[in-house]
Length: 551
Image (cartoon, rainbow, N blue to C red; front, side, top):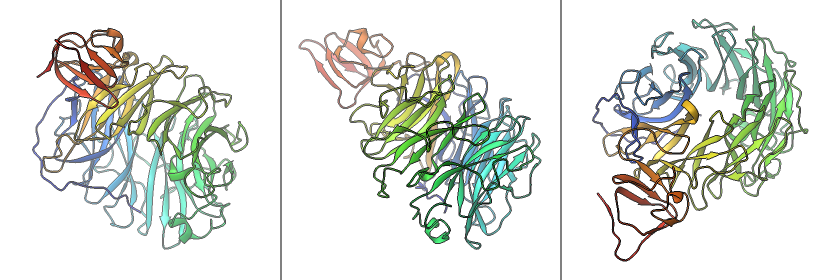
């Protein structure tokens, strides 16, 4: 079923800008401000410490791309005129992208240009200069008039091409199956038309992760119903009445042949539903294995109130390497879900986890041996009392992990760094964006010398007709924003205003600074700022005879 999106049906004013980094979190750097409502950004590295962003304009049914250089310059067209990936008629959603290793990227999506009820998979290659290299508006991967093809996922092959997997919901034949296709560097399909069937087992399945195998093939992991009591009943599946879905895997070789038996290899067959909401994530460990992290309902009892996070390592032959049915990553009371995973640089992974009931972001590191390295059930990334959504994740090349998430009831984009021991490095977090109008869906890519680029959907211009934009900022290793303009300063501890130790970056805010207070601060010296934002539970008390002014 197609995703429903809330749209603002208005008309916008457009201006063009080349941009550069601005270190004021109330201003930031505009990446896209064209007419339209741009949501769901997907980010990949440009290979030169910059970021390539893909996003959907739901109001105008288009997919667009923009590259932000490491210096904060818009590289493709302008902020009001980004690259058109696809501007054909019809709804589009489910964008997936992967860097091509040559400064560009591959991108795939579900497209309803041919039939408003049955989507098809399309794919495009964008060069390092922002040129769409394949057929205008994308190559048609699938051509099944009565099948809804959904959730494309991408990985590189080892020869300059790409492999895409997806699942097809065929309401006429009443089946749901996973498929895959490989394209070479010039966009020629290498496997069977409409894709090879990933598994021939009874039941239904949907692709949830794909990882390159290093030999022009791929590992694909599946949400699978073969062991569910209703797993052969199509109507139960489409109404989400599963009680015992599992995770199976398959390896396809360079010519698309199945390697782990035609039915696929059993990866996780614990009781309850595994891989809720298709949120499993998988990455290679650098030694030919794959680490899979997934949502798990084995302790839930079918109530959907105690979903946990588990993990498993799988070798190249499809054999699980850790405890049968995986190791527990987080089993605290309430629902937890996987946000994102990255390599820890030592053949293990770092996981970003959402705690649903308390709306907090947590993190955990899993070693290559399958041991939980940090506090049981994870270390808190966000603060107590924050309303948090998401938790995109990057590593900085020095053993640290950096998180980006919405906080403050979506008014803030916040970043936090954890060191290799899971200890916070930026106090209560670095305020990347302070926007009372709202922000959504931050994404993150690693940049130069331990810095990161964070981008998000932004509502600051939503009063203009149909104007939801994409903004970005670059965050330094100390947690400060790069660029010109007013400096941004955030408290990391309580204390006197003139104590450098209470401020992110270790410097007292100068004149014209943008200040965010998240702790108990005593104004003990006269000061002047551009703005002061007090974010709960922060408090500012000004001593008698002292004045702190804003402009």
